[in-house]
Image 1 (cartoon, rainbow, N blue to C red):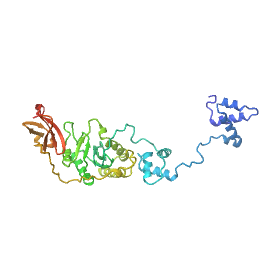
Image 2 (image 1 turned 180 degrees about the vertical axis):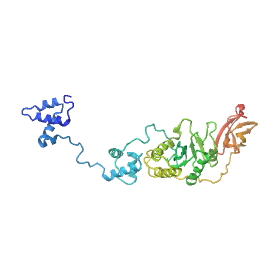
Image 3 (image 1 turned 90 degrees about the vertical axis):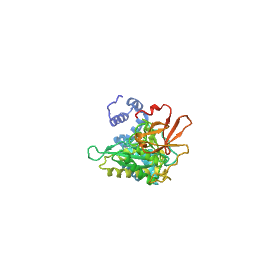
Image 4 (image 1 turned 180 degrees about the horizontal axis):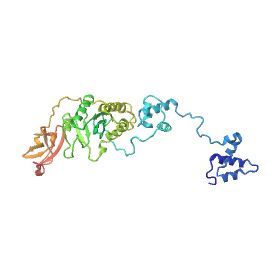
Length: 383
């Protein structure tokens, strides 16, 4: 441009002074200054009315904004953001609606946050969402896993292992446990407390790590055998497929962003924080996957009450029973078969299949494996 380097104000002033000279061609001036004719005439009009002050750039903000949120509403939005720094416009809007307030659109809430300098999008997001399938009713399936580990307190090497249990249908957080280890006995203690309060699920899905199971050939542990005895089915995710436990994986992201932003000084400190956030998550935090309802709106207690002792189980009339001996071996039809060591001392049922010489091995309702009387040498390895 011919006036590169000129300030906007000096350009306007020079333009109007030249335009006011007797005999000046305003259209030609506009062409030379690179401005539109309506703009040039607007500058002249303002200068005639107010002098140089009329050339000062005016705010484009309207004098009246009937759709602008009230100060009280903006204060409510900012208050919710302070209480929940990971919540965006949509969650805050639906929380306000649930509170009975005439909340503005989610985009308006987001604009309020941006106008007040709130950083948006730093919590979660940025990765492709898992494809999730929802079970029809509460307690049809619980997902359970540890969310890695974090440092605990000032003791060198001290670690906290958050244990999470989530209902698949409602996304209701059954439990968030602050644990010092990942032992089966630790998980069992947390599960007993959950079962006593919420009842038994029909199935629990876990991954293949400790203490759920170690390999695809041996997915059963003492913990999973105990669950089977209570009448709870146990299923394991496919190796290297975290989407199998997609809801719990996504839950972990929210837990990290909203409840684990600061380090914990002690186990009790962590558990207090987890309990407080679990209440918010279940009863206040709008959930996008639930059409912005909260998990407590959809969750119901299980009608299957927890039994303090192992209940009896009735097998089928064609089942053949064997007790698992030391090191996990069972003798059947004069042939040895190996079973996971978690079943040592337990009685299993061998059920014939339509295939000749093949049997399915069950422990109560849970199928353990299939065995075949053909190719016996493979089963005897390690004797």
